[in-house]
Image (cartoon, rainbow, N blue to C red; front, side, top):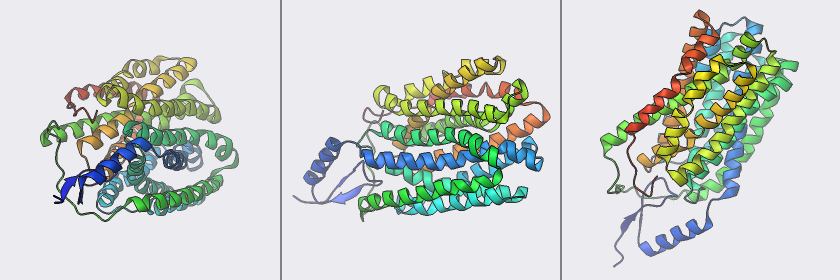
Length: 421
């Protein structure tokens, strides 16, 4: 009567073998009743805020680096590529490894790479050293994102879209804070002031170490068993096609956001004659709108279905991205807010959709989508920089205006089982 049976718990990354179903069922009910672990979600979201604040400093100091070292737009794009490419290569590897053997303190250890990257960037006086510093910050991002996304899911209490949105909210607000801090600190005090932000990295290390202590008891020795597929789950071929579509959708979204975060300041300076500090405030407005949109996308996906949110958030931004290159200064500010609200709401739904397509591989999938898709966005930013050198920044934004049209590929996404909307 007590023969082992295979069960699957949402709070574990792989199925486990247990000796009785009843205790597991009781445990699942208790966890559902408990709901999300809000303290852990707040901690991982705040860590995401600190992590992405430091990352966004790189793009925010581009005007300083461009003027100081006489860089062209292609070289600016290469800095973005150095940062994004490091994260792109390593995030899926980190996620795959931690799927098999979770590392509760890897987040704190990885953050030390960002710590040293910022110190190096503050003292860099050669272009190659700047690239190395950007790559070190990217390495910290590669270690941070896959495992922190898993922790957010562990702490979700079954509200996966909500948990992913809370996690994304911290990162989005962190990204938006970079330009403001650059305008208030780096522009007045120079490149050396970037070293001050290493204190943020140290704070993140402390928080992530504490989260690691919460995470460690969640990791139990378990025997691997074959996962039982849901009878209504899509076929492996449909899953492969869907993952390719989701990567394309996230690429289109990320490349457009990357084009704004990397070159929007230059666009405003060239077209409207704004000062660097004033242009950074406009960039902050756009990135803040991104943060708000990222928060609401996940709960809306939980409520109405992730496929619907993906459709609306990407394709819905197309009319506004098409209008942006022809708008005046005030119109550009308004349109950037609308675009940010709409286009950023898709991130949580895309990532959770992908996680549900490949259950028990949350780390690897998170690494692929945080890494590969974002890294491709970095490569695209380098290409756009080269295009801007040959044409103009305004022409680049006319081209990027069509990127949300890639969202039409969402028609190829399968219908998920009712429990995984």
